[in-house]
Amino acid sequence: MDDDHWTPPTVLLAVDLVILTLRDARLHVLLVERGVEPYKGAWALPGGFLGHAAEDLTAAAHRELREEAALDAETLHLEHLGVYGTPGRDPRGRVVSVAYLAIAPGLPEPTAGTDAAGARWQRTDQVLSGDLALAFDHRKIVEDGVERARATLERSSLATAFCAPTFTITELQRVYEAVWGISLDPRNFYRKVQKSRGFIIAADTDRKVTTGRPARLFKAGPRTDLYPPMIRPSDPPETKGTEG
Image 1 (cartoon, one colour):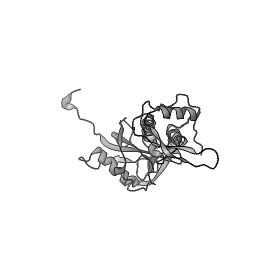
Image 2 (image 1 turned 90 degrees about the vertical axis):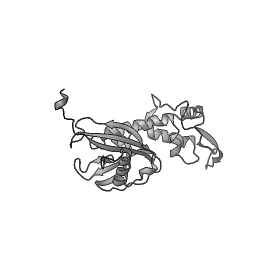
Image 3 (image 1 turned 135 degrees about the horizontal axis):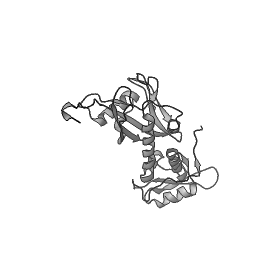
Image 4 (image 1 turned 60 degrees about the vertical axis):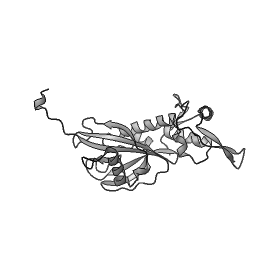
C-alpha cells in the first residue's frame, strides 16, 4: 500500500452497556427501546456515541446509562467486556463499540430518556434464544456478557451479594441456577460450597419453619475469590426452559 495516497477510514466510537441483575429468580438484562433510526422501535442495549473528542470512554458509558435509563452508573462497578467492530454492524458507517458489563443486585426500574422510547428489564433467556430480537449485534454482546457473569460466579463470591444478609444453602443455589440457567443437584452443590474455604460461614441463628427442623443459615465469608472454584457442571441434571 502506498502510504502517500492512503487515507485512514472514518471510524465512529461508541459505548454499549450490559447491565445484569436478578429479578424473580431470573437473570435479566437492561434494554432500551430505540426512539430514533436506525432500528427505531427495536430493543437494544443502552449506549451511544462519545459526546465529544475529549470524553473518556467510561464517562461516556456513565452518561449514556443516566440519559437512556435514568440509572446512576456511579453506584455500579463497570468492567470492560469487549470491543465490537465487525464491518456492517451499524448501517450508519464504520462504528466500533466498547462494551461494558455490570452485575448488581437490587437495581430499580429504569426510566427512558433522551432518544430512548422505553426502558425495561428483560429476561436474558428470551434474548439468548432469539425470542426477542435486538438491534445491531447486541444479542452477541449480551451473550458475551452473560457468559462473563457465569464465569464470574465460578471464581468469585459475587453470588452472596444477591442473597439476604443471612441465607440458606438453597437460596444461594437459586442464585447460581438463575445465572447459569440450569438446575443443580442440591447434594453436589452443598458439597462444593463447603469445599470452597471462606466462601460462606455459619450464622449464629437458624430460621424457624412451620414443619421439620429449623433451616440452617449462613452469611458471606471473608473470601472474594473462591478456591476451589464453583465450576459449572458439564452435564447438569436439567436445563431451565423459558417457561414462566
